[in-house]
Image (cartoon, rainbow, N blue to C red):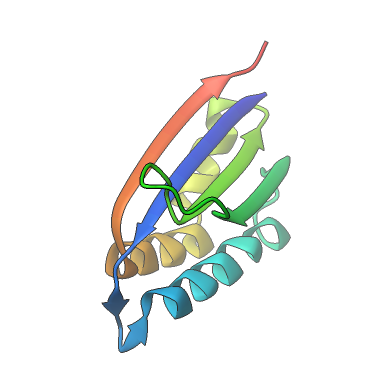
Length: 101
């Protein structure tokens, strides 16, 4: 499986909402994606609980059968709508894609 991991740091405020409100909205929008994107094999979204200086605010774990499936997810209109939200409400994003054994 091809694993796709994303970490998000939220802006303190954006779109007339506080960072925690945007985080909840982003989480909700991400969690809706498996219902409309058939290529997703596994999907989890979680809020950070440790709140350490090295922590990110929100994490996404997803898995796909192939690079083609990951690309289909990437360009899907529902995912692109979430990407647009990410651009407005996050200050940083980190991504790692890797094949498991």
